[in-house]
Length: 278
Image (tube, rainbow, N blue to C red; front, side, top):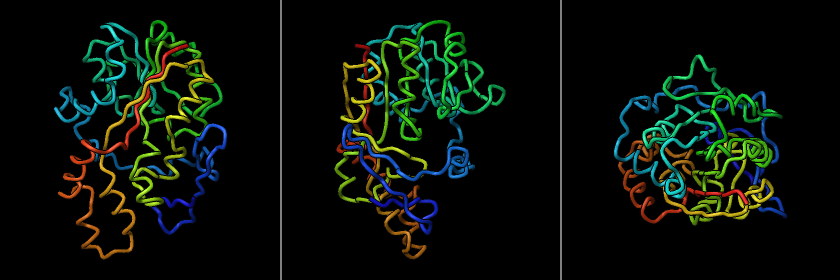
């Protein structure tokens, strides 16, 4: 299936293909690893306020939806590794729950903003992860490793999970776009959660279970919930519409707020998976 970069629609499409064995869908012709970051926006204004100490009620609810499969297995003081932590808002949420969280991302330790949360700089597309350095920073074996909307951005997700499994966590908690959401088939290539080349892979329960079984994590639980798909997908499909119509379908439109509320109740756009060591 041809998929277009929603930021550069005029560019040549990327080809989405499916592995016949595990069902994983992936971009067969991605940019070179050293060039991928030029496809990401440099404006982080959307994250304004993300570094505050308080967590809004809405965000707490969304974080609970992400963490609910894992929370019942945790005790205060458990060691958590948040891989690809971004600005650390989810790591901050888990630390507020009493967990000892270590975050990782690609920025340097000097530029990591949340100094109250320990941090290790990691390139998730590198051949070998600094396992000893991570364990030292954690202070021991992690109870759980969390990848929140990270795995779809990685070139070789199965190799990353196999490498992280060397840390011997009891659990992995994964959140990814649900590649088998009903609206994916409704909007096809315009589906809002197709986002090449930033999203390199598209997951299902089957493909995730295959990855984790190979890494030694065979007990799988999954759930899902909805985020807006309709307005985002229509916005993408109408890239040639007049500017006035496009503005009505913008990210801040009232239509998206209504669609987001309905999606949260009825949608299945986010797939959450908890994998336990076999």
